[in-house]
Length: 87
Image 1 (tube, rainbow, N blue to C red):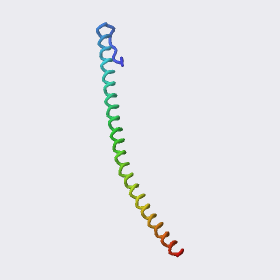
Image 2: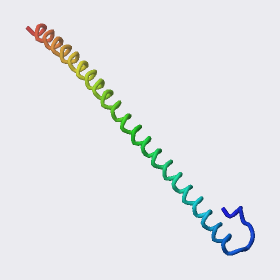
Image 3: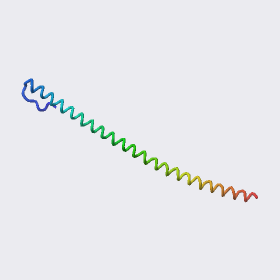
């Protein structure tokens, strides 16, 4: 900013201030656009990650239900063998 300084007239001084201010505002707007885009991408990634967690949780729950059913069947089998041995 201010690298384009010319002669010492008052109008050029004001022109330089206006030009530097415009450059500053343009930079602010560009940075705001970057922040907005990065925030949107982060939110999208977060939502996508959550959706994958639901599928993974459902698969884990199904696997646990299957293991529980197998365990119950084994307990029933052992109980039947124990009752048969006690008779």
